[in-house]
Length: 284
Ligand code: BG6
Image (cartoon, rainbow, N blue to C red):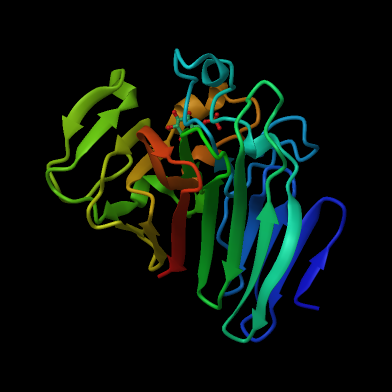
C-alpha cells in the first residue's frame, strides 16, 4: 500500500524507486524523506514527537507569522514564534495521486485558535516523486469582507554530512538580506558562494532566481526551487545549537535550512483571494 497511516503519521511509499516520506499530523511536519536509500531530512534525536513542542527537524510549517511575534495587530502580537500551524493537528483530506510518476496527499489545517479570529482555509499538498519532494501550501481567505495578512515559510532541515563543507549558490548578486546574527542589519549580497563558517541566520528577500543549490562537498546535495514564496531564509546555528534543548549534540553540523517563504513583510489576501507557496526539493 503506497499510502498508509496510523493515529500519528501518514507515510507515502513510491514502490518503484524505494523513496518514501513520513508526515506527522502534528504540524503537518514531514519528518523523514528517504531517497536513493538515504535519509534526506535531519530530525534531531532529542526532538519531542509527542505534540508537546514543535518538531525539531524535517519540515515544520511556519504560519501565520515568521520569527518572533510583531508588536501589532494584537492577535498576531499574542502568537508564539513561527505561529501556530506547526503545533496544530492537521487531518488527511485526500489522496490526490497514486501513480508511478508520484504520490500526493492533501492535509488540512484545523481552524485557528479562538483568539485568532480570522477565516481562512489552509491546505498542504505533499507530493513524493522518485527524485523529488514537493510541498505546496494553499491558503484561501474565506472572509467575505476582510483582508487577511500572513507570513508563511517551509522550514526544511536538509540532511548533510558536514555543514562546514557546504557550498550554497543561486542567491542573486545584489539581493538584500536581513542578517539576524547582526541584529537584523540589512545587507546586500555580493554574489558568489555562501559557506557556513559560524552561526548563519539570514533572510534573503525577493530572490529572483527562486532556486538555491547546496553542494554538500561529498558528491551530492540539493536543489531547492520555489514559487509563490519570494524570500529564502538560510539558517544554521552552529555552536549556538547547544542552547537549544531539543537539538542533538553536534546536530548543527548535520543539516542546513534553506527555507522558502513569504516573510520580509506581511502578505495581504483580499476576501476570496488565494495564495500558493511551493517548494520543490531535488536531490543532486
Ligand atoms: C529560523 C530563524 O527560520 O528558525 C531563526 O531564522 C530561528 O532565527 C530558527 O532560530 C529556529 O526557530 P525555532 O523557533 O524552531 O527554534
